[in-house]
Length: 329
Image (spheres, one colour):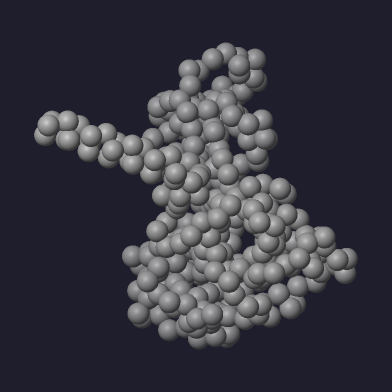
């Protein structure tokens, strides 16, 4: 009797467990792949709202119930740099907010987009991922193998663990048309494949590329997401103006950035051993000579709470300051 009862309880537990798994929605499955602070994730479709303004220009979100949501601000740089495409299905989490004047100075056309009058929510977007890219979570950097051959000619991918893989084919034809640059940061999903003869007739130079003997495997690219701008490894020495955004920005010297003569903003993110930040005194409008190289943004300042601003700050390139000196009058 006890054996039968135990078997019955076990069977009931198995059924309930199976039901729980079956009842888990795609949104819940996806949510496990997103950061814990995303909150509730919903399914939506990106729509192009001609002449609209917002976080991603004219793009709005149409929820499954037909609600139109205007993305207005972003919780982080990755969300802000999301590349919207017409009618792409996304999974997104957001908080409702009120409109502020951050886009008041944006020049927009005067036509009325088809979704303009249907916008009923203003959104602060916390997390977003395009359908089909939810497993696109392998961090990699594009490298130039000079005379190699592959999906993107001589470009290979360096994974976080230092492993070099050669993109050989693509799951989607559109992926093969991407214009990637050396040192571009990306997230990918990939499947290992056998190297075949598809590039046998490709004309290549005879030099041996720097990554040729380091390639560990050949892969099919199943998805790829671009992260920020390509990293320029060149070292530059220029004269620049000090700009102080106070608590609205974070870096080596708090809200201090450097504005170049071309109008670019450089965010000091790290320094060489030669530079002692505590000994460098900087003030707004001061001119300095800096030697720097570009670096990738990381989370070293993630604990610093930034002040809200009415308008987004100018886009800034993260840099490592190799040397710095005031410009003498």
